[in-house]
Length: 82
Image (cartoon, rainbow, N blue to C red):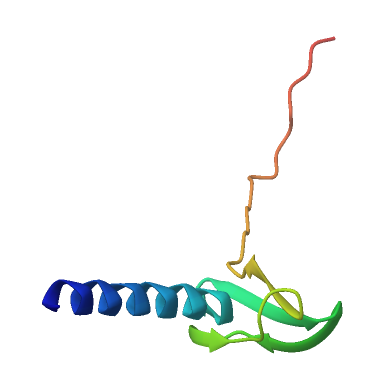
């Protein structure tokens, strides 16, 4: 009987974890995210943290890198042949 209870607890835990993965997502410090509902933007998230949404067919999220990519090259002459 104890073996069946342990297996039942494990199965309930795994099903709960999979369900949480369907409705939760994480935004990191270096990311921006937005949620779309049926293809139309609903909300944006710029603060890091754990956020929740409706399951995937209804709401989807996209994450983008928010870090600034600035490259400042030395302005000078470029020697060419001829």
